[in-house]
Every structure is written in C-alpha cells, then in structure tokens.
Image 1 (cartoon, rainbow, N blue to C red):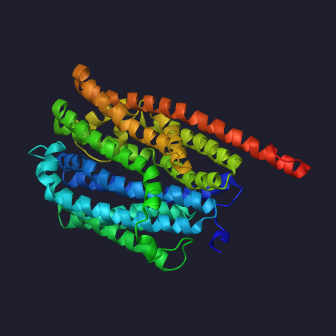
Image 2: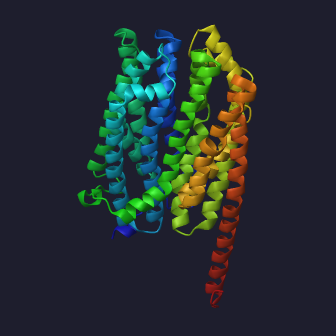
Length: 465
C-alpha cells in the first residue's frame, strides 16, 4: 500500500534532518542568488545605470511570475507534506498534479496579458523615457519565460515537500550556472545588453523545467505524476490555494508595493535612486538567503510532524529554525550595515549610484537582524495549514505596513521617507509575527502534554482522560 512507503521525513533527529534538507537548498539558492548578482554585475558594467534601472523597473513583473510559482509550490508543498505525514500518499499525488495544472494555466494567462500591454505596464511601473527602451527589451523575454519559470518554481517546492532537497538543489544549480554562462555570451560577447540577460533567463528556465520533469519520469520520485491527477479537483485545489494564496498575496502585494516605491524614487531621486534601490535589493537577496533556506528546510519537517501528530518534534523544529535564522540575520546585519559601499561597488563603478546605494542601505538594513524570525514565523503557519495566519503575515508586510508608509513618509522627509519605510515595516512585521506565533507555540505544548498523558495512561492500563 502507498501509505506504508517509508519517507525521509520520518526521522526523530530533527537537527540532523533540518541540516540534511537545508544544506542542499542553501547550495541551490546560493547559486541562484549568485546568478542574480552576476546578472546585475554584467548589466551594471556593460550597460550602465540605465540598464540596472530597467531591471529594477521590471522586477515587479517578475515577482508576479514568482507569486504564481510560490502559490502552487508552497500551497502544494504544505498539503503534500501533511498528507505524507498522515499516510495519505494518494492525496499528496493528487495535490502534485493539480498544482502543476493550475500553475500552467495561470502562467500562460499572465504571459499573454503582459505581452499585450507591455508599454502601458512599464509606464505604470515608473519607467522614464530614458529607461523605457531597456525595460521593454528585458521584459519581452521575461514574459515569455513565465510558464517555464513558474512550473520550475512550483516543482522546486513540491519535490522538497516529499523530503528530497537534492533534486531541487541540482535544478537550481543547472539553471543558475547556465544563466551565468549565457549572460556572459549574450551580454559581453554578442553585446545584446539587457535583452541578452533576459534571453539567458528564458533558456535556463526551459532547461531547469526539463530536468525537474525528468525526475518524475525516471521513477525515482517518492510521489508519482499520474495523468488523472492533472485534472482539477476543486476540493484539492481549494486546499492548495488556502495556503498558497498567502504566498501569492505576499509577492503580488510586494510587486505592487515596489511599483509605488519606484514611482516615489523617480519623483524624489530620479533614475539614480531607482538604480541604487535595485542594487540594495539584490544585496538583501544574497545576504538573507541562508535565513530563507532555513525556513524552507523547516516547512516539510514541520508539516510532516504536525500531520503525524508528533508535536514535540514539531516544536523542536520551530525552536531550532528560529535560533539558526536569527543568528544568521544578526551576523549579516553586522557584516553589511557599517560598510555597504564595499558590497555595492561589486555591481557598479558609478560613484553617484554607489553613494546613493550606501546611504539607502543604512536605512534599509537598520533592523534586518529581525528578518530571520519573521521568515521562520511566517513559514510555521504555512506548514501547519493555518490559512488565516499565513495570509495575514504574508499580506501585512507589503500592504498594511510598507505601502502606507511609502505613501505617507515621503510627504514629510522626501527621499529619506522612502528609505525610512523599510526599517519601520520590519519592526511592525516582527511584532505581528510574534503576537500570532505565541499562541501556536502554546498549542504545541498543550497537545504534546495531552499526547504524553494519553501515552502514560495507556501504558499503565488506565483509560486516557
């Protein structure tokens, strides 16, 4: 029977298991983040500040692509890991098929809509007349890559949910290394500019997706793709969306927020401010990647043990993840906050962008030592299938905190007001996650005590209370 299959997540050694799942994810995301950094370095040195501004302008559109992939990947992963923990492998496989179908349909819709309204969208996203040609060249290929990139992102989370971190790691490495090589060829050798960067992303996305599909076709996967499971079952899809919608809402809202940030930066600082923000944003992606990976490693472990009613192990996993992610966040803060210009010079030699980027980074990184706790805390709700809390923590940061602050603060402090919105948002997000997480921790402790009491009662021959 399927329910008797042994899964890697069925392991009492929580710390060992978290390292086992997190290290491959760290390697894969490190290479992927390195690609984003190298991509920006190529554009910064061979195209210039206008090219960096174009990448920054188009980034919100890329986040919509990421939002669909994470909605299906994280929503599917939560349902899959909980189903495996409960011994319901058939349900996990149905979730896999439905997540793939929904990701394919939604991404095709986004591609068609984006290509049909590209100039209008770029204008709304803050592209100036100077930056618009660069942004148009970049966005066209990025939109074409959406179906491939989205499916790859969804499968990345789903494969990890069944306890296999190695295949997602290899997939990310393949995509990132190929992307870096293609960037060098297209941008440097063929002088294709930002168009070459986007074309490299498209080709790498296709190759990565082929690798992930081949994993399932090889028969080595714990879960299997069955044609019948590709047909949408609304009960399964609703369960996926109930959790995945929080990831979609977070990234979609973040995308919208970045549009308004870019417009505010254009108003109060011009294209140089947009370029500086783009570089600091890439620096943040690289700096806090380890904390993100720890949260990713926690998700399948927590989901499995919660589904299996092993509350002591679930609680231990949460504590370990919070400690590790917080330690990393503090270390990153100390490394970056005092000398951000050292890191920004890697991307560009433009003195104006370097000065603006260093100034912005000191605002943006001011309380970034809190980000590890925020990431892990938000992941707890997703892994447990707690849809309301997952949605609130996902949507609050961009919509309830950052967006209003970006609207309000520049009216009093102009460009400084835009930068000040970031640390205030981090502080408010930390408080919110802490308030929501405390009741969940107490619940785990209560359920663990109840399990213990029932176990003692059954071994002593008395009925449980």
